[in-house]
Amino acid sequence: MISQILMIVTLVSIWLSLIMELIVISSATLFWLKKSQEATIVKKLKRYPLITIVVPAHNEEIVISQTVRAILNLNYPADKIELLLFADNCQDDTYQIMQQVKNLPEYQTRKIQLIRRQGTGGKAGVLNDALKLAHGEYLGIYDADAIPEKNALYFLVAKVLEDPARQIAAFGRNKTRNARQNFLTKYINQEIVVTQRIQHVGLWNLFKIGRIPGTNFIINRQFVEKIGGWQNGALTEDTDISFKIMQSGKLIALAYNSEAFQQEPESLKSYYYQRKRWAKGNYEVVISNFKHLFDLSNWRVKLETFYYVCTFFWFNAAIILSDFIFLANVVFLLISTFIPGIVLPFTFSDSNIYIAQLLLFNWMIMILLYLLQISLAMATQFGQMTSEQIWLALASYFTYTQLFIAVSVAAVTSVTIDKLFHRQGNNWVKTKRFNN
Amino acid sequence: MDLTSTFFTIALIITEIFVVITLILFICYLIILFRVNKNFGKVKK
Image 1: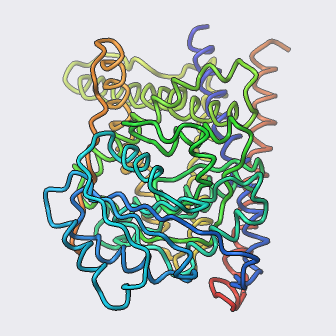
Image 2: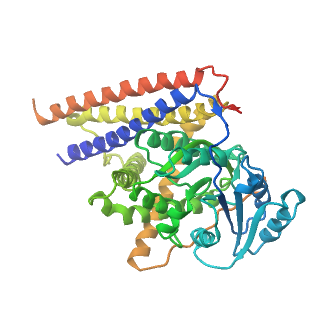
């Protein structure tokens, strides 16, 4: 009886995640069927609002020069861009390099302000300081390693201007600029492309739900002031502010063709610390927003909270349990070669063999959907859908995705210890940059 | 018909629905992939 209940719970878990995936992929597919026929048009905007672009940089001497130049060369009227460059608690030459770029003859007429900052609060702290200095109607945020494509800002502004009263912010996407560096960056590239081309697109197309990313987005300055700015010291200040925007009933619009190029971690250690920070930040946001599942909050907040709760708690727990069952059976199988007669702890009997077969079949659909969403996401990027990507996707299902389980277990443990012992665990571990 | 077989029948129908949707999505993916569109990925001014 217990085994049957367990199997039914397992099957329902798989179904729920399958339903969620199918809804999002279907929505994204409809979007791309339509958009793949349309040309991208860059025409003159009705108006060009002043944009204050903020670049928080903490020891970013390797990448800062390229980013600042790319921002200053954006296809947007030069007099409508105010640039705030923050050298935040830097021990390297970030500030000096910013100064060098500012002093270049071609940028003499540009509104550029350099700020050497020694305060606390991490990136959110920098953004709050920028809020006090900014004059722009919108704030544009670019991380120090995010090189915007020439029309990136144009597409963001064009998107918010479609409905400025409701679309309070717009976000683009970040392409991996070191995607071909090694296996890890290839996997990360696939993950990011799927997140942006399937998850973001699917959710926006169907529910008008958007998520503020860490970089390449604009947001109405007055609105940010009204909600009290960014949460100082938050590990994922972007998720936090996304929930606040949705709570207010406003929209975070997707400007799907606004692109920036960002560096991703090239070593496992760097990946681990970055993802652990993200996972911890997201867990904290989910925990603090959990109450909204049961109150009179905006339906988008409820849907997002439900999505995060399922992904971060339910499905993660299910995967960990399934890995545990698999490993336990493997261990018992090894022992049985030395001590005959030992029975495997988790097996199916004759009574539930049909449900077992069904489970296996549903799992296969899950893998197929996983491959399909990667293939679909890659197909939306000109020239990226190659046979190598399919083999990579298949390999990543059994390798790269399992890495995240280790990260999420570490993050849950860390959050739990923080809560139990009132530990200040929000140490911002900076993502390591690579000179390539 | 006992509870287990009822559940199995329902589960089978749900699984079949998933298979059909996945197949439709696969066809759509092929359309997107093979759609010869010279505008795709280009910017017009």
